[in-house]
Image (cartoon, rainbow, N blue to C red; front, side, top):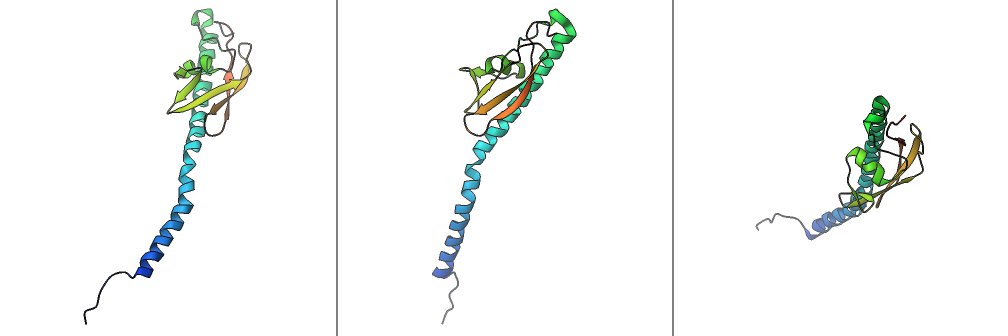
Length: 139
């Protein structure tokens, strides 16, 4: 008699069951990565804006009234996004299909530090600090 080679039906079913269990465990881990990425991107945007306001304030403080520094007296996307080279669409920052909203209070005076919050349409909010520049001299 000729001996046949191959897998039995039981072995094939066992492999399919093992792959199904792995898929059930692994898929939720990958599905949540989009919100984690949006949260990390929001933190990056907040850091860029924080650096931008610090440079804006330093420019105004170093050069005085001739610096024409950007007035920053509120935590809004319209005021803060241009300092980091970001584009504001509809009052918010839109990047990669995700909308980021900036909110918070102050700063009302030059040199004052305020905490703002950037919230992506998915994911978690992140806080960042800005330095205010309430006039063109930033002093």
